[in-house]
Length: 137
Image (cartoon, rainbow, N blue to C red; front, side, top):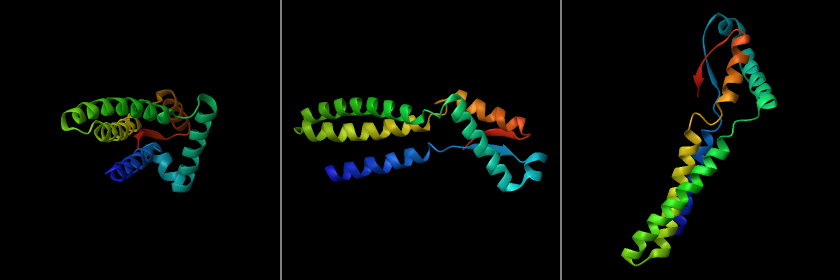
């Protein structure tokens, strides 16, 4: 049972980390059409790098870790309580902690407001280049 829990935790964490790599989505306006996909990609990467250098990289990892820890503590406490009733407090606490940590980390990774200054910086850079940022994906 413990191996299944660890495997599930790893899978959820991998999915959560894939959400960390969000990039701006641009409306296909005239500048977008004239530039072509290669130039658009270069401009996006330039703006991402400039924002990282100027205001720091997105802190999605910190948010994910914090909510993962909180989820683990809450899940462990709930699992321990259930375990006392069922007769296996250790196993239940471990299962609850693993599930809570994975769920909390995934939740933290998916929060859109992890670093709004970074996003605003990237969006302004892209607007100055003539693009129309629509959101992040």
